[in-house]
Amino acid sequence: MPAAFHVPSTIVTGAGASLELPAQLKRLGVRSALLVTDRHFAQNGLAERFVDLLERDGIAVSVFSDVQPDPTDRNARDGLQAFRESRAEAIVALGGGSPIDAGKAIALLAANPEPLSQYAGYHKVPHASAPLLAIPTTAGTGSEVTRVAVITDTERDVKMMILDTHLLPKVALVDFELSLSMPPALTAHVGVDTLTHAIEAYVSRKANGMTDPIALSCIRLVAEHLETAYNEPGNRTAREAMALAACQGGMAFSNSSVCLVHGMSRPLGALFHLAHGLSNAVLLPTITRFSLPGAEERYATVARVMGYASAADSDEAAARALAEGLESLNARLGITRLRDCKGMEAGRFEALLEKMAHDALASGSPQSNPVVPTAEEIVGLYRQVW
Ligand SMILES: [Fe+2]
Image (cartoon, rainbow, N blue to C red; front, side, top):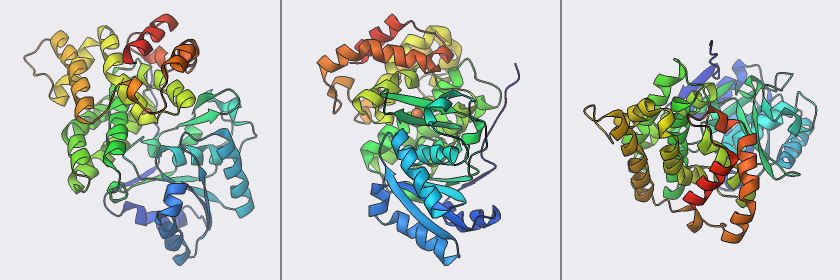
């Protein structure tokens, strides 16, 4: 089957990449922009640095910083209003996955009628979005290079996945220097999210010849550098490698797919506000073990790339070593069991299991998994990770 490959037309990487923002906006003919970010970056001075940078170059800029973690359809609607009031011609999204996903939704709504929920699913956006430039500060979701946005539908308490080529940023400025101040726990969570993107892209039924080498490169970078970035936050080599890994992981899954881990992770985010990276990390070892029989050879390759198995090991032994290796990686990164995560409550978790299994399947992601589970099996897997 033919496979298409979509990435931003411009990806700038390396120290200082974000300083290219004025030049990139000018190249696109943009004279005024809306900077979409969250409260953290509005308060710590980073948003202001970019405002100054743009104004010095004669580009008008307004700031919309009302994006919450797990951004919602309401955030997108408020951002759209700010976009219209400021008469901006483009959107600059600055932050982790939440501001970038919100930026994608605002850019989409700037050119397509509301409500946002009608675009949930695959390829339902009729018109090209307003131009979007993305500057990630975490390594990360890879959202700066994907055609996916995850936005909470506040009416149904569901994390909607919107996948459409119109969501792709025009420019991604991947500047690892912005990630140097990430605290260790966040580094761990988004780092394992990055790893999950690449593993899922590689074992997915939608994997293809373009995504495979990018996914494997991401996996190698994470194996070599995540723990250093976690233990030594100021280590520039590790931070640069993780920023590249996040970008590659994003490119890989956006053009292959995510699978069961992400399918089961989104309901935990929507219903318990568990951070995206953490919920993936908690699920990854168990879901990997469940999925091994469907793609043993591929999981074995991942294990060898990560250094958990050697060429001499059988595929079966290597694949098993991967599930064990991911478990110990979690432990070294301080990632606990689901029941120990903040906000998780046993009674509510039990009561919501059926809904979570239903929502996971409805997202479409589990259908790309090497082993496609039933709703009952998903309930069983949630109980196992508890
Ligand atoms: Fe993710």
